[in-house]
Length: 226
Image (cartoon, rainbow, N blue to C red; front, side, top):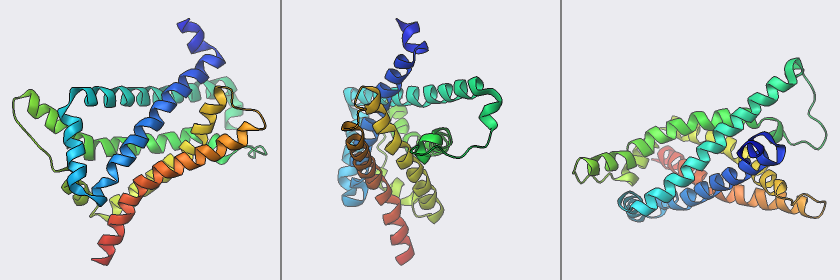
C-alpha cells in the first residue's frame, strides 16, 4: 500500500493534496494570529503565550508544521524526479503552453524562494520566541518573550519589510496554483467546477497572504512617515 501511494500518480497527488491542505491550514491560522500584532499587541502576545504554554496547542501546531515540511520536501523530490525523467529536454527552451499558468511552470523556483525565506522567518521569530520559551521551561525557568516588540523591532528595517513582501508574493503565486491543484486532484476537475475552484483558491490565497503582507507594509509605511 505504501509503495503504491509513493510510486503511483494518484498516490503522489494524494500526498501533495493532504500535506498541501495542512500547509493552507497552518498559514490561515498564523495569518489570523499574526495580524493582531498591529491590531492589538497585547492580544498577539497572549496568543503566543497560549501556544507556548499548552502542550495540545503545541502538538497541533507541530503536527501541521510537520505536514508542511513533508509537502515542501516531497515537492522538491517530485520536481527532481521529473527533471531526471525529462533528461536533456529539461533544458530545452520552450514557450509556455497555452492555458498553462506561470505559477504552474515555476513551482520549483517559487518553492526555493519560499524555503529560503522560511528559514529566515523561523530564525527571526520561532527561534527567538517559542523555542526560547520552551528551552526556558525545560531548564525550569519562566521566560516570556515580548513577541510584539520583537516583530516591531525587526520591521523597523525597510530591507526586512521588502524581503518579507517578496517572500509573501512568491507564496501567493504558489498558493493560487496549489490550492486549486489540490482540489482538482480529489476530483473537482470538470468544466463546471474547475473555474469555480480556481476562483476559490484565488480568494483563499489572497485572504491569507493579504493578512500576512499587511504587517510589513504597515511597518514600512510607519517607518517612512516617522
